[in-house]
Structures are given as structure tokens and as C-alpha cells.
Image (cartoon, rainbow, N blue to C red; front, side, top):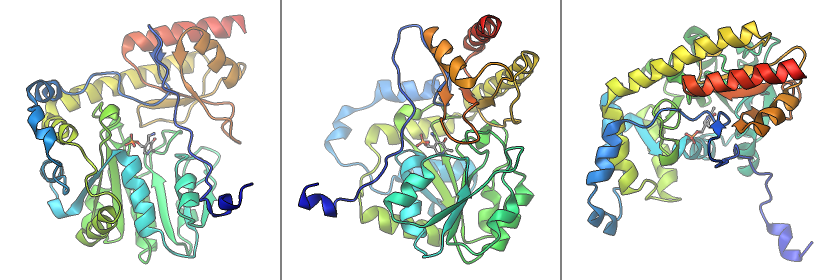
Length: 353
Ligand code: PMP
């Protein structure tokens, strides 16, 4: 090891889901929306005046902050916007998790949490999900340096009752509690109304799933004005121009098209419910998902075998080689046609296994 390497900040990075680009593939591995963004986004892109790119964007991301505040009926001072919820969450870890006591999150959850904790040298303790893959609220009611969990959780898809979230929140007034609501629109109950009651609560959401704009990288967080101010202080100490002009304009257009948002959301939910039934008939078990993916396991066919066989048929799903979940596959909900092809292949694989 070279001498200078002693002072390198060494980290084990997060492994993002694979982004294959095969003709005719069915991509069900990173929970993207199978439908395009709102047609209003296309209109904005078509009419975009490229002279705007000469200038730096608004560092406050004002237009998007205002559009979100209007849509969710909060004050602009209660909203912070970033480059995907990954960016927003990372900044939240950096800003709010500075205790010597460990932060708490589930053992099976979004696998970026422990990576950020390691990057920022934040001590953490993971809390096991119960045998039904549910978060046990009691595990978060002890002394800690902060709490974060995803609702619905990933990769399980299981949602918590709002009353349980409030119990956790109420029991930890001296630390920051972050609810990662990346999948909330597909069926969970948002903790957003609780920000008026609890000044230590942050609710993070994203355009990547329900608004079909993973490629634009827009995430946002709602919270008490003081929390948002602290986040802005850190942001301006790191990178003040986070969002580009095009993304700001398309983000505003997407947020304003509520009818399209609801229509595509309902289509994904209907397909998910049909898939639960059809996969159940094939013998699969799965936690009850309120998200845009299913976390499935078959009593006879190992998950890794299914993953490889599906891949041979140009269908991509996600597998985690981790304790407790290494016989499960996370399958994003695609269009009805995509899911019918997926089902046909799964039937064929089971029959020949
Ligand atoms: N939280 C959870 C639970 C996720 O699954 C993801 C997406 N992989 C994210 C946050 C980050 O999403 P994005 O950065 O695209 O908003």
C-alpha cells in the first residue's frame, strides 16, 4: 500500500441495479415506471429555449420547490429538492446524523443506508424485520442517534400503518427520524401530515418511481422549516447548483399533471394486484406489497436459478445474495404485456426445473 493511501477515505460502495440495454428486453430490475413521463414533460422539452443553458440555474430550485409546495399543500420553506432521493438522503445523513449513538434502520432495507453511514462515519445498528418481513416498531423506541426506514420498505414492499410511524416518531423526539417514501404513491399512507406535529420528522419522496422520471434525477424532502434550513446550509457548503435548468422545467410540468400521474399509478397498481394473484396460483409466496414491485419466492425453484433462466430469455429482475433474502427475487411491475411475457417464461422455467 502506498503511503498516501493511508489517508484515503476508503468505502465499500453501493452497487446500483444493472442497466442493461438489450433490444427487446423486459427490464423489471430497478423499479422504474413502465409508462412514459407526463406528455407535458415532452412539451416542455420540445419548447425548451436552449439559451437558458448559458446561465446558471436558480440555486434555490425555486420553481420546483414552489410547484411541490403547491401540490402537497405545504409552505415552500418546508421543501428541499435534490438530485434524486439518493442525493437528498445522503445530505440528510450528513446533516442530521451526527450523534455518537448509533442510528437505527432495518436489517433488510434499501442497501444504500449502511453505505452512507460508513461514508460519513456514522455508527449504526440494524434492526431485524420480523418473520413476516415487517418492521417492529418497538426496535426503534430505544435510545439512538437517529432513525431511518423506508415506507413501504424495499425490497419487501411492506407498508407500515401511519399510527405505528407516529408511535416511533413520538418516542424519539430528541433525534431526527427520516421516512423514505420512494414507493408511497403505490399504496402506503404518507407521513407528510405529521411534519406539522413533529419538528424532527423528514419525509423523503422521488420522481423516479410513481412519476416515471428516474432518468431526470429529482428527489425531495418535506420537513419543519428549521430542518430544511439546516439542509440548505449543508447543500450550499457542498454544491449550490444541484438541479439543471431542463430538469427544473420538466419537473414542474410533471408535478402539475396530476390526472396523468393518477392514471398511470392506477394502471401499475392494477397490474400488481393481478400479478399477486397469478404468481400465487403458480405457488409463489410474497409479502403483501404496496409498492411497484413484488418480492417473490417459490417453494421448489431457487431464486438464483429463476434469475439466470429469466435472463437467458432477456428478462431482468433483481436478486440479492444476502442472508434471509437469498431465495427471493424482486420483480418490478411492468406493463400488462411485459408481465404476461414474464409469467409465460416463469411457467416454462418451473415446468422444466
Ligand atoms: N429509497 C429507496 C427505498 C429506493 O429503493 C430508491 C431507489 N433505488 C431510492 C430511495 C433512490 O431513488 P432515487 O435516487 O432515484 O430517487
